[in-house]
Each structure stands twice: as structure tokens, then as C-alpha cells.
Length: 149
Ligand SMILES: CC(C)(COP(=O)(O)OP(=O)(O)OC[C@H]1O[C@@H](n2cnc3c(N)ncnc32)[C@H](O)[C@@H]1OP(=O)(O)O)[C@@H](O)C(=O)NCCC(=O)NCCS
Image 1 (cartoon, protein in one colour):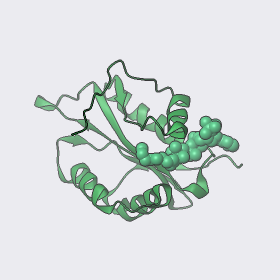
Image 2: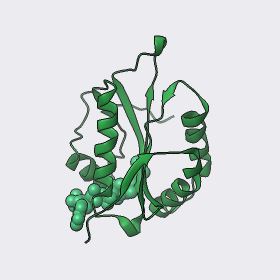
Image 3: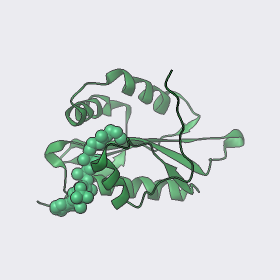
């Protein structure tokens, strides 16, 4: 398949519809409320550095990655950041856009001193685990315990 010629840029508030649309295609269920909260946090407060990016091809948003870096007390960035969600339009997958998004996301965080990036993946989502593993993510040294009530 043709390699991507996507341009990566910072996400803007106006990307909301494109992001929700890609997420719906990927997950086959709409989550506008989830993204409304994320966008409010990203663009409505000064406590977080907007580290979210989109990939554009011919002026159309075809992928995105959203994360947050909490700006601690005295404006000092924390050493850990979180990647919340990533999505590439199914019609544009397998061309390296996901890799490009992660790579620019990591470069961006490295420049401000972040040393670790966390993300949560469903244990049963082997495709996504393989994608993250191919992009140098590994299992964390801590595990998340839960109890059903
Ligand atoms: C995971 C995801 C972001 C990957 O996006 P992508 O743009 O397809 O990613 P890449 O192209 O970088 O890599 C995907 C595969 O394409 C392959 N690839 C990359 N460039 C390629 C090219 N030019 N030609 C052929 N294959 C290529 C990669 O090797 C990789 O192969 P693998 O899956 O066998 O490991 C995308 O599949 C997605 O949106 N999935 C759903 C994510 C999700 O559930 N999000 C919600 C919770 S976070």
C-alpha cells in the first residue's frame, strides 16, 4: 500500500467533528460526549499542555492521537505523560500514519522533558497491543488491580 504523505500538526478545537467521526468509524460506536470532555480539558484549561496531534492528507484529517501532560505546580512539567486515544481512519490505515503520529507525539514530549509515556490497552485487544509493541511500548512494571462489586 502507498506510504503515507500525511502532515502532522497540533490538534485544534475545530478538529472535534473529524476526531469524533474517525473514532466512530474505528470503534463503530459514536462517543461525542467522551471527546467533548477531552476537548474541554485540552482547550479550556491552562493546566495541560496540548499534546494532541492530527494527521492531515490533502487537507483532510485522517488520524489523531490525544494525550495529556499535566502542568504541575510552578509550571513545571511532570516527567510522565499519558496517551489516551489514537485513531486512524480505516481507509488510511497500514500506511504508517499511526507510527508517524506516535513518533511526533514522543518527540514533542521529549522536548519538554517527559521521560515516560503511559497508555492503557485492553488485554484482549491483541491488534492494538501489537501496534504499541511495534512502537516501542512494553508492559508496565506496575499492574492495575480491580475487584468486581
Ligand atoms: C492502531 C492504529 C492507530 C494503527 O494505525 P495505522 O495508521 O494503521 O498504523 P501503522 O500504519 O503505523 O501500522 C499498522 C500496520 O501497518 C503496517 N504498515 C505501515 N506502513 C506500511 C506500508 N507502507 N505498507 C504496508 N504496511 C504498512 C505496519 O507494519 C503495521 O503492521 P502490523 O499491524 O502488522 O504491526 C489503527 O489501526 C486504529 O485506529 N485502530 C483502532 C485504535 C483504537 O482502538 N483506539 C481506541 C483506543 S486507544
